[in-house]
Amino acid sequence: MSETKTLSLQLLHTPLHALHLARGARMVPFAGYEMPVQYADGIIAEHNHTRAAVGLFDVSHMGQAFLVGADHATAARALEALVPADILGLAPGRQRYTQLLDEEGGILDDLMVTRPSDPDEDGVLMLVVNAARKEDDFAHLAARLPGNLRLLRADHRALLAVQGPKAVQVVSRHCPEAAAMGFMSAVTTRFDGIDCHISRSGYTGEDGYEISCKATRVRAIAERLLGEPEVKPIGLGARDSLRLEAGLCLYGHDIDASTSPVEAALAWSIQKRRREEGGFPGAARIRRELAEGPARLRVGIKPEGRAPAREGTEIRAADGTAIGRVTSGGFGPTVEGPVAMGYVAREHSAPGTPVVLVVRGKELAAQVVPLPFVPHRYAR
Image (tube, rainbow, N blue to C red; front, side, top):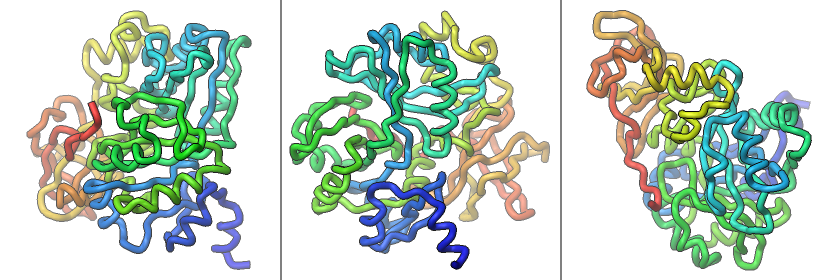
């Protein structure tokens, strides 16, 4: 048996694997799964289509789970012992972004937490974590939750992301309730009669939705969406360029256990009560960084010229001193030029600061710029 076939047999498949193959996707290994990196039109065309109309992403490889307690306060306080966000104050039908932290305040993973809108599900929190981290995350949670809570993995569910400025028109044709949803809201509903959970959120900087449903029903939803003239399937390549332009972090690249939320420019995700009370892992460090500023900070970087600066590129000050490294970089189709994110010493983090990027042994001029590179267009 060839090495390629052996690798393919070792990789997991999402419930939409056959659909990707039928549509001519080029498949690659990603987080233990065989996933589509692009379709026939190519990454730039898929990126531009998502910015102009609607892209459909298979994100079923991500980890879904339910945290179940006697009531919301019980579940929320248990989760707040592990994350810095205000979960207790999360209203029914609302979603919040946060991070699992280690004892030093390093980021073990970033995740979405949703409080269901259904009163019968009081005490339930829905979690979505990254694919590459889900086994570690679920073990971490299970080992630290009090005995009166249960963590129920939802491996029987699939997840779709529907992203782009025309997403609301497309999704509301099949689920009228979606049109009235606000950004970071969520609802248990039906899509053409199929039970599902929909949130108005995403990972592209565009308006859009994420649809969670039983794995056995996801192909029906995907095919109905792909039957709409505005919708095209989008692979991991464009997903990465879209999130980079939007200034959004990728775990294992822009954030990991060596970075704190404050260093990562994610302090906005720590609400006032948690900043004041603490009570989460690494709180002393994080509260100190909030008060005094971190030693380094994630920033946007715009290289001059056309050469992209990839992950690992050294960042130097104008005088040649090493001040950081690029964590994500590439070509931004919407920006029509190279873009990058990375960490630099705080004294070099102000927008407009000139920096030097060492690309393939050559020093290239660049500048620190505000994030995101492309304005967010969420439904506020």
